[in-house]
Structures are given as C-alpha cells and as structure tokens.
Amino acid sequence: MMKLLLLGDVVGRPGRHALSQILPSFRRNHGIDFCIANAENAAGGRGITRGVCKELRAAGVDVITLGDHAWDQDEAQDLVTTEADVLRPGNGQRSLPGRGWNVYRGPGGTAIAVVNVIGRVFMPPLYGCPFEYMDEVLHELSEADVRVIVVDIHAEATSEKIAMGYHLNGRVSAVFGTHTHVQTADEKVLSNGTAYITDLGMCGPMDSVLGREVDAVLRKFLSGLPTRMPVAKEDVRVQGAIVELNERTGRAETIRRVQERDLTGSW
Image 1 (cartoon, rainbow, N blue to C red):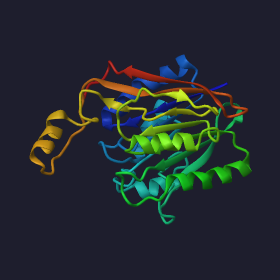
Image 2 (cartoon, rainbow, N blue to C red):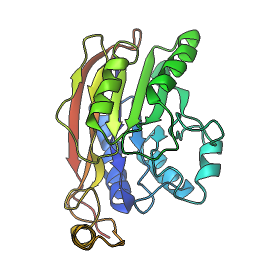
Image 3 (cartoon, rainbow, N blue to C red):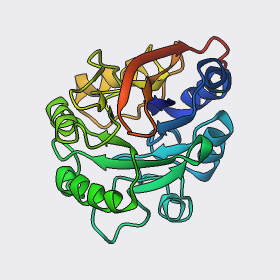
Image 4 (cartoon, one colour):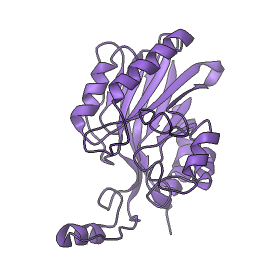
C-alpha cells in the first residue's frame, strides 16, 4: 500500500510557514510516501517563484501543481519550463511553456503520474476542454503502463469537478479539486476505485475570506472598486487529504480529510 498526501492551495507566507512547521513531522507520523500541493497562490497570494519552490521542497512537497494564477509572477514561464516537479494546467494552448503532467518515482521506484488540469466554467478563456485533455493523457499513460495516476482539477464549479471525478472513475487513482480554498466534506472512493474530493481547502489563514484580509474584501464588495487585498495572518491551517492505494493496481482503498493548525506562526 502507498499513502499520498494531497494539499490544498498554499496561500502566501502564512501558508508556506505552516507547511514548514507541520509537514515534516506529519509525513513521518502518518507514513506519507508522496506529497502533492497546489501552490498557485504561494507567492504573496498570486503565483509562484523559485524561492517559493525551494521552500515547499524543503518542507516535504514532492510535486507542485498550479492554476489560473500560474503566470502572475515574472519568472513563472522560465520556472515551469525548467523545473520538472512544477506542473501548470495542461489543457491550455500548445504554445504555453511547461508541462501539464509528468511521471515521478515514489518509494521503491513506483511510477506516479501527476496531472494538472483547469476547469472552464467561470475561469479564464486561455484553456481548452479538460475532459478531452485527460483522455489524451490517459492514452499516453496506458502505453507507459503507469498504474498510479493522480489528477488536480483546478476549477470553480463544483459540478465540473464532480463530473471529472466520474469521467475518470476507475481510470485514475485519485481526483482532487483545488481553487475555492474551502475544504469540502464529500471525500469518497468511487465505485471503480478512484478517490475523490471536490476541494482540498487551503494551507493558509482561516480567519479570512479565502485567505485574504476580511476588511479589504468587504471594502471591495461594498464599494465595487478595485481594492488591494493582502493575505491574512490569523488561524493558519494546513488542509488536504490522505489517500491510501494499492500501488500494483492503482486503485484507492481509502481517502481521509486532514486539517492541522499552525501554532507557531508569527510575522
């Protein structure tokens, strides 16, 4: 059996700090074999940098996925091109730099494919159909005989994420949603052995509006004007899920939501 730890969107410095404090011991205590985290909000709340990647790797993240903020930092295009452990949504224009999926090696050399896709409902028009893209990727992976396949669908609409779960049921090991920063309570193993959860939540401040300072967000809603929305700082938690699967078949056995509070944060 193999244990995967899937982590929700890392938000700013508070989220990174929480991971550095919690993840190393959490991996040891829970026997985690492989860890995937979405980090599209990890650099000041928007995008990712090389420095952020270094922090996340040091904390114990094996693969980093992204989303609609993938390109917000100037160095992002070069970063996704050169760093094999950083994935951007793959269902974009073919001219986009970087990769949407890759195969990694877990304990004992087990091949683990990680795929990053983005939804189309209420999302930027830069991207194509995630369902068609997944069919193309799975065709390639079938020829490589990779059994453990994990999919991050970064999407706004709950229905789109759930539909993807059923579209991939029995074809991948796990489908997890990111982007909304709110952990959902619908984790389950689908009928054909695919672990599913609509959203992992976030690694960031809970005393906030999706990781941003409450007063700033309220000003934006009340005035309708563009407003700077800094990352909040209080009640920082690490949220995600643990999936236990059979590495020979790729079928998931269990999925369990997790949440750990950072009691050491100060900034």
